[in-house]
Image 1 (cartoon, helix red, strand yellow):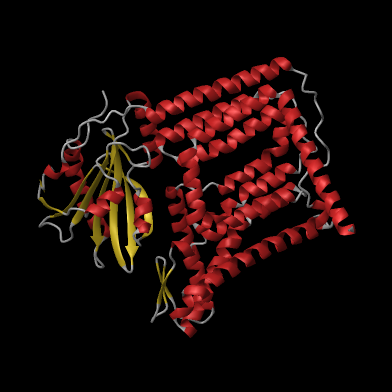
Image 2: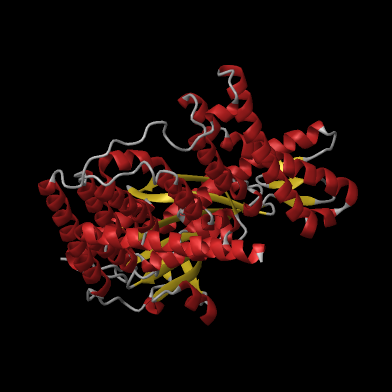
Length: 539
């Protein structure tokens, strides 16, 4: 009876509490109708325009281990923000709310036109900051700025940046690991990202680059620096230290794996042992980060670390009555409503704008004789062409009697580079095909800038030149290409473009200058010829 009495009392208390909260919410909506409905409208507008970017976010959280922590970050941010609920008071909105809303609108529209999901995803964080400034003014924005900033760590890097970053981490981890292996008394050689133990060769692939540890550990470093309310320089050191900690322990992992392979065979580098070692290394990374924070606090502050671990400010924000500054309130609300409506109209227009699809020549009729060069068509299989999403393409092997090695010429043409259809960057495709990028530079061939890439795989090397043709204009920089796409779509309604790539093998006894010479010679011939088979510049 006693137990049932308390259960009934607790249940009634819970129901009463829920009623009180719902009543408070209803009262808030009644007293703040303008702000409430403006906020709802803003959320609906940006959720509608960002739907594809949100789906991409969920896909990468679900399928890419380095971003799996993304599911937790919004929950942590919600918890951190909830700690300020007693200190936040409704205030007249700051003009910063309108500025942030304008910035979010521009980022969203630019992302929609260029197909760059990163801009749209970052815009959602800016929108949340704008809503904070709308409800709690500049004081509330200052209070919640760093918790909301944590959301950045759930946004994946663009593939182009991720691949370049991964390649550098692979090479750095491989070099450090080889030095550790040699200290263990094992004879080892390093070629790119391949660790040669003699009988066995270990390749430090993308998954072993350390990025799977680095991004989650940087998130933890940011969280630790935020929660630790001690000296600012210690907080900065804690965050920055996540990078060397990750690189050092990832290199140690590779070295230990090589030692195990040397003594127990290749089986220990696969399956359960490989995955378990990965989890163990990440746990050690967290332990080292915690020890570093404890040590810095003990040496330089000489106070208990628990005195510094806090996530709320010591003084509550000053209360300003909502009735103060009604002119500013309605001015800010009018700006938010207007910007949101204009963003919705512009976003809808961008998504449904009638594209101008210019006529392009049939590339199958592209000439196979250019100077002394003779070409042979190599058609793609139907499955490959479909997966690439190309509207037309060229794949030709060129050779000449003057040189011993052939040159592969590839053109991928897209009539519409929006809606996720665009040339796959070689920076992404090359590592995806198992090749290691050893060096990448930008050079000029007869005043035409191209990207020059040296790649290798299992001792075989190749030299690659590539660039883009965007509506008659050549571009080597991939972000400049995005700007051209944005400008031409807005001005001319066109988004067609093409990737141009030339590849030649590098023989063991060959000078790299000879490979450069044959690529440059063929590029000079084809650069003019291919323009006749791609749409002309807009008039």
